[in-house]
Length: 114
Length: 114
Image 1 (cartoon, helix red, strand yellow):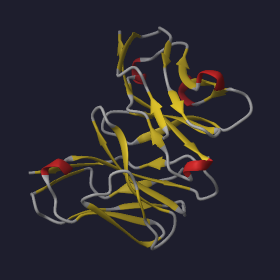
Image 2 (tube, rainbow over the protein chains, first blue to last red):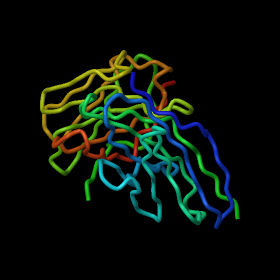
Image 3 (cartoon, rainbow over the protein chains, first blue to last red):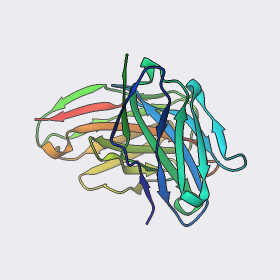
Image 4 (tube, chains in turn red, orange):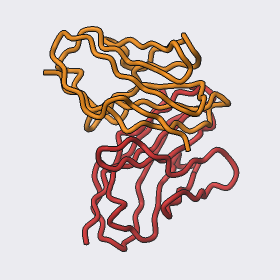
């Protein structure tokens, strides 16, 4: 069965510090991978996506993510966090085997302290 | 930009009522989805639709039904609302061109069943 794991329920970082949010997936086929961000009271906004090619992908708001097939991971990173990055972050996976059905992780809540 | 509009941001209903949640997208997307979001559980797929008058069950369809009479509109129906259906409901849409198409989300409807 397909699954997506975000091991960190909650992370706190200082403004200006670097950030890494973890995502691991379990799939038999080549996955398509996404990161979304959800600000309080809002829907989900797409940060970035990986389909193929270069394993390091750039997204909006200064975020990037790296696909590592050997580790079944797609971790999200940002070199310097801003207070406005405080939000909930979701990793999602879809594959040819699942059609258009996305599988979401349970999310990581990010708190940014001054 | 894709716009996915959910008719209500907040809704309060009583147990046993029939509840309609409406979602409209303006990008002529083939695929539409309904999720519920609960703390610690992430997003869980209720129903989805690949075309007008078509619907498919997601992971948690019990107690829900859907209607898609027009391509741009996808309605979620709680036939007889119960308190365990208190949740945040998110609608999403995507282009039908393949599994790698990102989903675009509305701002959500926070539904309380009393």
